[in-house]
Length: 291
Image (tube, rainbow, N blue to C red; front, side, top):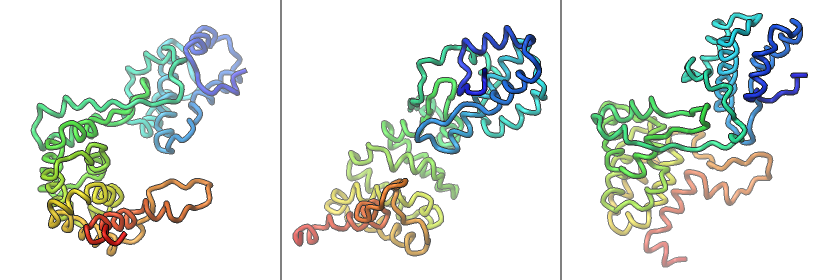
C-alpha cells in the first residue's frame, strides 16, 4: 500500500497517526523504512542539497508522528542524531509543521536575499552572521543568501567586510564568489571596480585558486572600463589571476556543465578561466583595431 509513496503529505500523515496501532507489525516496518528513506530527488537538484533535504523531511515526519503517539521499532533519538548530521540546521520545532499542506510546493526553490541584519553590526561580524543565516529553509523551500543581497545593494559594505577578513588572513570562498558573481558588478563605478581589482591583485594564490572562475569572469566583465580608466588596476588583477592559473593545476576548466552532451570546445574554451582572461585583453584599444 505504502511502498510507492514518494513524499508523505498532510492527509497521509493524519491517516498514519489515526491507524498506526491498527497496522500489522510488518506493515509498520515498511512504513518506517519509507519514512527513513525520505523524499525523491528533484530534477537538477544537487547531491548535497538533496542529501540534506531528504534528511530534513524524514526528521519532520518521524518527530511529528512520534509526538502524536506513534511508537516506532527503532530508537527515535538515535536515528535523529544520524539524520541531523546531514541536516544540521533542522530543529525539533519544525516537526510541528510536517502535516501542513505542501501541495503547492512543487520542486521550485525561492531565494531570500534580505540583508538588513548585516547592517547594524560591526564589520568583523558581517561574514560570520551572513554565514550563520545562509542556507536552505526546507520547510519553506527558500534559499537564504543575505550576503548576496548585501553584495548587490550595499557593495561598499560587502567589500569592507571582505577586506576586514583579509586583514585577518581569511578569504572566504563562498563570500567572494557571491560578491564577484553578483550581476551588479558589471554596473559598478570605475573607482569601485579599481578597489576590487587592487584587492584581487593582493590575494594569495591559494585563496585566489578557490575563486578562480568568478575572479576571471569579473576581470572580463570590467575589462573594457578599467583598461580605459585605470589600466594599472586592471593589469595588477589580471597578472595575479594569470599567476594563479600557472601555479595551480586543474582549476582552469570551463564553468559549464556538459552532462551527456557532446563537447562544444569553442564554447567551453571561452567559458574557462583562461578563456575569460583572453577575452579581457582583447579589449585593449590596439587589439580592437586589429579586429
